[in-house]
Image (spheres, rainbow, N blue to C red):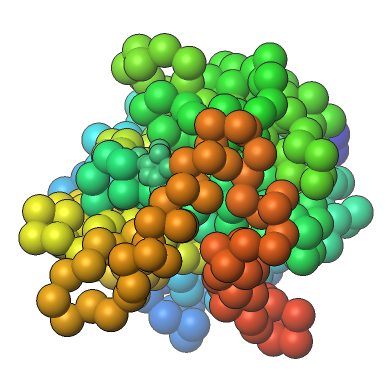
Length: 380
Ligand SMILES: Nc1ncnc2c1ncn2[C@@H]1O[C@H](COP(=O)(O)OP(=O)(O)O)[C@@H](O)[C@H]1O
Ligand SMILES: [Mg+2]
């Protein structure tokens, strides 16, 4: 690995000095320039200086009490120096800042206080992905399915949507993030590894290891299975960011079953998703919960991504669906789960057609429109 040229932007002078020592300490990179200001626009003199320095990485320190200038700088740098990898340095206690930094174009979010080994790992990842990206095409899209209340049908929809996407496009993964994973039961798959194993092995994760952690359904869909015990998950949200970043680099579509899970990981993955399908029933309690979940998912940015899916609505004044049809569908869906033969594998059903329709609607523009897939790696 040839030595990386790094620029450090940090308003705080002590932090600037510390970062310089840490970067040089990695012995794979060298601090070529430091600055105490954050570029506010393309005409900022700092931008011209950075063009002259030609760094490969810019570390942007995000102050805890006033993150906005640094976050805006990441956007400006992303525009003006699109080939440079941007690493944000900040506090893990501010999930919204992490997400904003990633969305602005930071490739990595590194925790403060930072260590030489944190930086070294990030630099190594950078050179590995740079090599990998050359081989790979555009990045995949993430669709997350979450429910307003347990039992609304999130898992059923995630499983069948993933199968529909796989049969239409191929190269699809289903990731089971539910508090207790049911997806492997729906698909009748024995999964020797789970999401937790993938997170534990992130430090050595590459596409072949990722592949080996998944179980493959007969239609080609690859499942990264969920938790088999309801033990609390202590992985940090940023670890999920890294896992999904890898997955989006490898799969064309990644479907996530979050079911009833409401924590920092769900919020982060929701924010990284192209679309979040929020599954609810048409009753008051369900719709009330749905509105709380929407609030939880994103104070500001997430809202337009979230789409409400009214599943299996019972006969309620104002809704016109025959009782018979609802009963039939219920029978088909529950029998499918009992037998471990998902609806999508029984292609003649009405519901299977509905899932094909959903898959088509979610991917409508993907083939002919420039893909706007989520990517932490805005620089690729
Ligand atoms: N469209 C539907 N029609 C009939 N039954 C459904 C439908 N969607 C889900 N179900 C049933 O509802 C139950 C709960 O669904 P599940 O997907 O596990 O929900 P969640 O993941 O939101 O908790 C399942 O037993 C399934 O049989
Ligand atoms: Mg579920």
